[in-house]
Image (cartoon, rainbow, N blue to C red; front, side, top):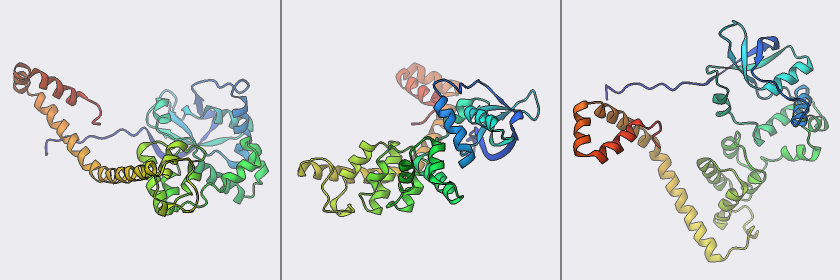
Length: 296
């Protein structure tokens, strides 16, 4: 194991934030503030005075001009700040100058994050009608968003706070008790599927004793035997998921070490020649494993 090389992952952007004057930020493309994106752009312009900039801009230091930064993400926000006469803005400084690197790893404002943003604005004294106008939504939607976490346990809120949930998913979770809410939230996260049909299927597979309202009818007409089979299969799936969760880290470590050893083994000319001559098929498979970028 002493010969195993330490592999360091490159971090695309840091967590430190920096206030930058707008004249030191150089956009990499022009934005259309009058065409198809007009409504979206005006919504950003209206929201900034009320709620501030929720997502910082993402910039990269320009090598040719010290003190200047290339804008990777946030072109509409930058244009809105310029229109509003804002002098400086909060930014995240990236360590990679390719814009897709950041965009592939950031999640846009999730429903629970939006709720927190609105609550913060209301506590600061901003009326609901002004928030609705800034976000280009009606007041009823804004008031409803304030209640999306009512009836959910805190652990579920923490699990799903940055997830792009489909409308109705959180509402379905409120039909089951706290322990079942956590189980479903974990399954949603493991499958990376936050759609309403998937959440509804998990609720349908919930045993009756874990429902908040045990007398409430099931949302769809399902035969008792089908429902029972679904509950049994769901319970089995959850057990398998727990087992996989407990062994995943160890298995990944073993596979990583195995691939490293395999690369060294195939780098030996004698071993490679022997495999090519005597076991061509096996050599091909082992070579593909050693050359693969990902383990799973």
